[in-house]
Amino acid sequence: MQSKGKLLIVEDEKIALKSLIHVMTKEGYDVAGTQSGATALGWIENQSFDVVLTDLRMEKVDGMQVLKKCRERSPDTEVIMITGYASPESAVEAMKRGAFYYIVKPFRLDDVRKVVDEALKKIRLKRENSQLREQIEGYEGKVKIITQDTAMLKLLEMARQVAPTDCKVLITGDSGTGKELFARYLHYNSDRAESPFLAVNCGAFGEELLSNEMFGHEKGAFTGALTLKKGLIESAQGGTLFLDEITEMSPAMQVKLLRVIQEHEVLRLGGTAPVKTDARYIAATNRDIAVFTKDGSFRQDLFFRLNVVNFHIPPLCERKGDVALLSYYFLNKFAMLMKKEITNISSEAISLLENHDFPGNVRELENIIERGVAINTGHSIEVAHLPEKLRESGTHLFRKKEGRIPSLEVQEEAYIRWVLNEADGNQTVAAQMLGISRVSLWRKLKSYEIDDA
Ligand SMILES: Nc1ncnc2c1ncn2[C@@H]1O[C@H](COP(=O)(O)OP(=O)(O)OP(=O)(O)O)[C@@H](O)[C@H]1O
Ligand SMILES: [Mg+2]
Image 1 (cartoon, rainbow, N blue to C red):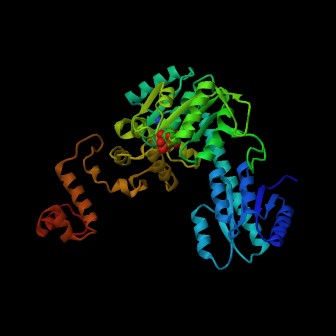
Image 2 (image 1 turned 180 degrees about the vertical axis):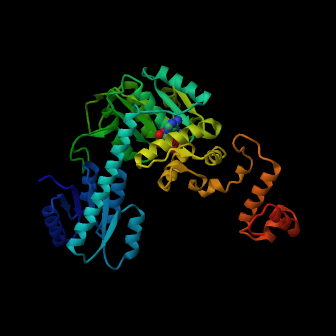
Image 3 (image 1 turned 45 degrees about the vertical axis):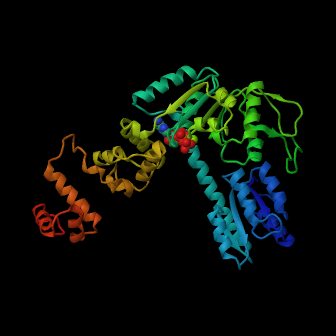
């Protein structure tokens, strides 16, 4: 029988552990069990589990630490916490930190079975969804950068020139502007396209983990290193390694990376013989890296190594012309993913979007459209499907309607309605905000036939 999934059980009471292992194995899971939290941490480091069922209160290494490790090492693993009946707060805390669910002791084995099944169902859905996404993205030719902006088109032209070379590239730009997408574009337009594109977030791990992630280790290099693990630098052989948030790298890691880049070889932790490497490096940051090189927290020699070619991606607010184009692109994408027939965005909705500043850049726009599609029951994204903060911005007071400048009267009416709404319908407050008397407001309400009059 094929295993239903890989399950790790961490429970310090021997009898409870035994019965859980027994039941879940009979259920068809591939089960590993241990009484020690520390052992569990080692396993999680080196293997991947679908579900981890852990006791909260254990000596030395407790359930929270197991949860934390899972979040760091394998974000797709679902963690279920077993808590004592007397500690509901810690159950809540565990959920806040990303546990899938909690089971209160004493529990019925049947409940455990149900919760684990639910967790697996969630994992399956997530996987299906990401496969679907990949299919759609693959169908579009791996990476598509949507733009009509002159500056962006120049960058793309330059990217096509640089892509087939092994030039190191530094991509800068605000959060959500598309740095990682750009890096993928370089990769898929190079001869390395058939080899892996691997990304590492230099800010997401502590120094030790990052080092383990990038350089790998030999079997037995430290307790818990049960098998040999190749690092990302090695695994990106023939492909591209994307070093995200490069300024977050510690000084010691910077030295190690510089050495690898210069010598084209890497030493696994605990290893004695260096391994040849052939990865192309693309680094990115949303910070002003010049500040870091000036104050010495980022090595200048490494900066020069990585910054052979620099692409600076402009924020979305500097390319307003892309907003409508991207909106329709994301609309198609999410309508397809969510199997909805939404094909239009109203011109009012587009003007609201075009008037927004997008501090979160393209990612923010993408999220807004995803939400707009998700909550939609019709065939078009309307103003009502946009987040409140856009609708309330008020900047929509100056926008063309069907390409024409509206008359002062039309503007005045819209303005009064908006202020009245801001004042929660209170006419005295609205009159104050408008700087006119209550009587004048009343007259205007009447002439525009605004209901509240
Ligand atoms: N020009 C574009 N065309 C299509 N999709 C885009 C474009 N720019 C960005 N995106 C999409 O917007 C999202 C954010 O892009 P990405 O992750 O590359 O940004 P980033 O600059 O790396 O952000 P951060 O600094 O926060 O890591 C992604 O889903 C990406 O596919
Ligand atoms: Mg990024």
